Length: 233
Image 1 (cartoon, one colour):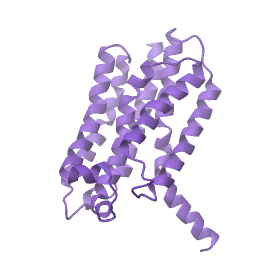
Image 2 (cartoon, helix red, strand yellow):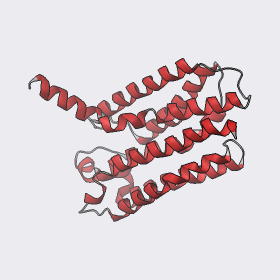
Image 3 (cartoon, one colour):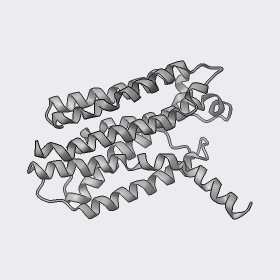
């Protein structure tokens, strides 16, 4: 294979369309640390370290995609590990390197983004149920079956928005965070597409992982913007 072919395969393996979404949990952490700093909840923070952490998150996504690009029972990175890495470790780690403090509330406010990141994986694995089952790859979607995977995907999306309301109600997030609802029409369209998937026809969800990644990006943009704006309201 020539160098161009190798480069093309590498780009496909890294799933470059997900790389913008890979920094989502880091961006949420950066914006929330800014919010905490402005309201006096943390004494200081370091922007540069936050940006470095964002870069590291993107590198981690490339690694995860390369591993998942070779899915098998030994190396496949599943939904739980994805959630732990992106929904818990990255936000906690980013906030720590920026402030030198362990900000436990970060583990809570990052849950909605973590759920949407898992939803991206679920969309991919639901589409690939038949192929993975034939290859004896035990993803959660394979274990649950199509109907179970559809319900789980819908639950992940709805839960992300419900948690925003809960976090606002307990004053962990500012009410302006309801800006994230502006992304809900896309979430609703994605849910409708998932419901249309059938055992013998998954054409409606062929691009659903990409569409879910777009939803994640939009959700994070609104969430982060709210965190940056909130201290000045």
